[in-house]
Structures are given as structure tokens and as C-alpha cells.
Image (tube, rainbow, N blue to C red):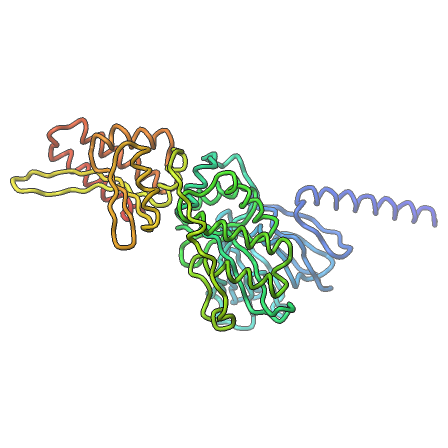
Length: 446
């Protein structure tokens, strides 16, 4: 009898292991704490999100799983796996339901009303019934996973395109914050950031794919930001810009940023002397020292940026495509003149700080067309001659395309150029078509 019981117990243990292994194969992203036998019910839209389920000794149901070891009281989620989702509670009849709203589907979480459900980035108190339609948000509402999916990439990022785009949109930031956790009383860290409108999210995904590091965050103000912070990942960014250097005066910011990186890498920023060197470098980057730092360290002398000024020239069409994606404008002007004589003008414009005047003049040399105009604090580059637009500019960007929303503005720009080129004089129907195209460009594009 003893041997029979032992054999049956062994068979049962093997069956339980087989079921457990089969379930783990169906959901490799899930780890269970506790010795529990469970069945897995997967929906077609389920992503490998949940990482650890912590429980107490009450039977409950959670998102399709039956966990016999207890009620789930804490759900921890891998931060870089959070997609476009928000959670809210519906408190009406028992049991309470916490719904997840996300781009790839939804599922319900069934909980005992006496327990508290904790979801990272969202926290619902089930006893407050007025929260049934309330969503608790933090500043960053979602995180795009940094898993590279080559199947959905539409654009193979050219390194010079990336540099050109960074010349327009990237920021090299040195953060310094007061802290009681370090001996010198201040902590220092670095960040490389690109902040753009969420319509151009695809560009950030391509950049993240190119670098293979960093995260993309959606902000609550309708923008998204590509962010790289760890010292190991920052080294990848620096290696790129060493090989494909920035052409605008942002190169000076990069060199100062790189100097701070070397100080942090050697841990000299933890010493008083090294920290003061960091402050001297930070004082010359972007907006310099904050009022708090100026008050705490009044004797810090900024590094002279003039020593780092670059005298670059545009020679790479991919750089110009990237910079245009960041800073360029494709404009259509409709001028109504007397006697029903309507004039259609096409313009291409780039704008930058006046300190990049020499660089803009090199664009004139590179393209063999266009003019530079100086303002009080900025410099503009314009191409207005239709022959230059149709013969030089459009062929260039057809071969080296701009990306994101601006690509669609360029395509509309080309449509107007084709209408104008093939119809002289323009008919009322032509002008009506151009008005319709113009209304959907730039700020008119939904």
C-alpha cells in the first residue's frame, strides 16, 4: 500500500510539472511565487507583460489565471514593457474590476473588495467610490518598450541623418541635484534627450533601434522623448558623435558633455575638486547653472565656449535630410493679385541661431542655390526660385528623404510643384487643388 501511494504521488508530481512547464512555455514572461498549481488562459492580444505576482492565502482570479496559492495583492511590471495603457476602477457591484485600457486590447482584473490592488504607476483605493471614472496619472503616462522589432521599421537610419536630426532636436544635459546620500552633498548624472511631438514617434523608434539603448516616454503634454541616462549607454551616444560629429554649434555642448562624462566615468565627480570641474563645464552648456547652484557656488568660472567653436561645412546630403526633418519648412504661399491673377510661390526654409551663420552659408555652397538672411538672433536659409526648387531641392529629398510628418508635407509640396510646372497659366481648378493641398500641410495636418 505504501509503495502504491508513493507511485501515485510521483505520477501526480510529474503531471503537475508537465502542466507547469507547458504553461510557462505559453507565458514565458510570468514568474510565480509559491507552490501553486495553475491553469493559463491567454487572450489573443496578450503581451508578455506581467513579471511577478505576489499573493496571500485566499483563492482568487486575476487576468485569466487561476492561482491556487492566494489572492494577488501586488502586481509588479517590468518598467520597459509598459505600453500605452491606463488603469481605472469600476466600483459598483462585487467584485471590483480594474480595467486596463491599452492599444492592443483589454482584460479585467477581479479582486476581493477588501484587498488593495497595487499596479506600478497606477494605484486604486477601492473604498473611495467616487474614483470609478478617475485615472491616476504620473507625468510620464507610458513607456515604449525598447525591444527592437525590425519587422515594423520603415526607415533604416543613416548615421549622418541621425547627426543632422540631433543638430536640430537633441539635448546634452548635465543634471546636478542636492543630496544627503553622498559625501559632497550633490549628485551628478547625464542625459541625452530628443523631445519631439508624438506624431513623429516613428523617428524616435528608429533612433532607439539604431543606438540599441535608451527608452522612449510619452509625456502628458502630447510630446514624446527619447532618453538615455546610464553611463554605459551614454558611452554609445558619445561613440556615435565622435565618428559622425555635429555640424552646428551644438558640437560645443557635446564636447563639454563628453568632458563631464569622462569625469563621472573616473568617479572624480565624487570629489570636491572634480565636482567643481563639472560645475565649470555645466555652466557653459545650454542655460548654464541654476539659481540654486549659482548661490551655492558663486565662484565657479564657466569654460569659454569660444575655445570649442567649430567651423564645419555641409558636405553630406543625409545630414541635410536629417537637419531638415528637424528644422526645415516646406511652404506654399498663395498671393491674390488684381484682375484675378493668383500667384503660387513655393519656399523652402531653414532656421537656426545666428551663431551658425557660417554653416548656413556652406549650405548655399553645397546646393548651389538659396540665400541666407540674418536677423537679430537667428539666421534663415531660403530657396524661393522655382527652378531651384524643382531642379535641385526636390530631386535631393526624393533621393535622401526627410522623415516623420515632414515627409508628408514634402510630398504635398511636390504635388503643388508638379501642378505649377505642368500648367501655365494656372486654371481656377488648378488653384483650387493647390488651396486644398495647402490647407492640409504643416499646422493644417491632423
